[in-house]
View 1 (cartoon, one colour):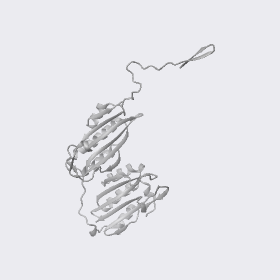
View 2 (cartoon, one colour):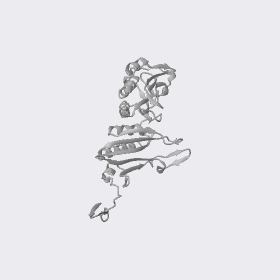
View 3 (tube, rainbow, N blue to C red):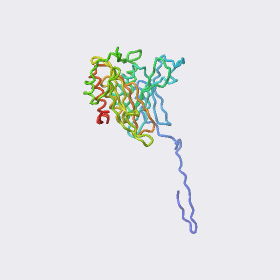
View 4 (spheres, rainbow, N blue to C red):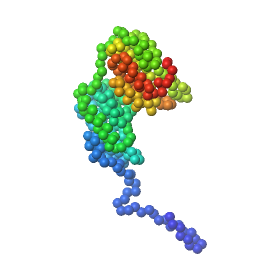
Length: 308
């Protein structure tokens, strides 16, 4: 806008901003990706979304024959693994969802964690599906090439474990025949438990707040481990209650101890701070399982709490 002075009169002259030929002033910035490189590193074809500034690669799980309540599921009905890349300042962020058979979950999770990705959720998307299909959500931030390479390694591990070639820890254990020594577990974990009906269970409580009130151990805000079997061959099942900042450390500790992660999700809405729950399953020597859990506990504030 330019002001022109005329004696006794002030006139305003508006000068509009002119768009250059072929210029769209409403056009969003491009994704600024080397899409060919992402496709090469991930081993998957992708699609660029100029509007959102993202590039998404997808791998349909056409190798799976899955039905849910009698309905045959196809890749467009939710059986497609994907990862989407988006620029964020000088970095790139990635989010994705991996479609996995149960025995593929932990091999794929280990590869994701070992290559700098975060695992943010693990759950089912269907009821009555056969065989059972799990969905592992991933995320990460950093250099585009490193993220794409990491995603590609996860896709590769999925391919390598197709057809029952993954992990399924099994053991012939009846809690009624339990003979393990609770003292060995207590000595390693640093928390005392209770032995009942052949199961030795240790519970470590935490606190959070909901609706203005404190909630704790008896309302489900706790980490627990239930052991059964013998010292030479035992099973442990349990649940970790974690702050969001603790999740990745606990995952790495459990996978490093060959303990399988079977679910990652929340149990509450509106809790402060937000508590994430991780369910696990392990088979092995009692002391080795306890050491693995101790390492995971050390990645949380629970390790500094008094025994429950």
